[in-house]
Image (cartoon, rainbow over all chains, first blue to last red; front, top):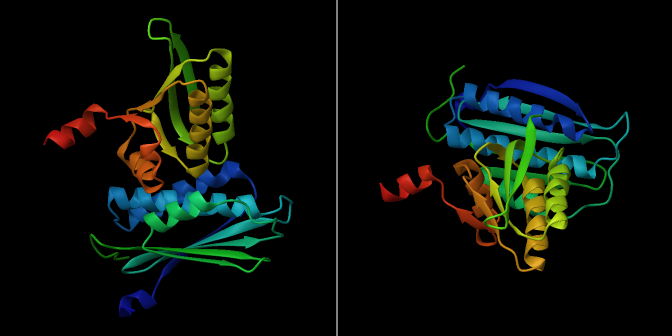
Length: 134
Length: 115
């Protein structure tokens, strides 16, 4: 890991289980990727990756006032790391094949941890056109 | 979220001409699917979807378009997509759906090809 990547600027957001707010997650992802000087194409990849991950998680979460999910954006020197985690009860797995195919094609690293009680999706976009200086 | 479907029936070409604009995702993709399916059920005909104003679509929106495509194909019709932005074309290619739809290149894409 590059020395400068040990320091990150983090932004964490909480969302209810409501598909109406996926656009807000997308807009935030786009704004953060833009601040990190990613290219236009890379910003589109990040936007779509976050949107698909949110949709994947919303389909699995039971809608209730106590359910929701959190998104952690970690802005590193050479990469943007995004972790989306559930907070609440889960339903049975749905057919999410297309979501995962898209996420894996758009991001540089993807890790999906689904233990049945909790889901965590980590997405990484590596800087190819330049490095992020705070 | 801004999203709209505008449609008219072209009597000459016997084809639905539909313009979808805005962002279509898990929140409104079922709504788009219903709007397009209702048109096909009203009049079995070909359908051309103009995507010039379509800024973003996710996998649920792609799934909705596939459902409409099946409906159109059921009676031997053709579904065309027109003016699809580059960021959305990429999603069609990733999912191999570029082979399922008739996607007509827009002027910008043609220009890039000929350059």
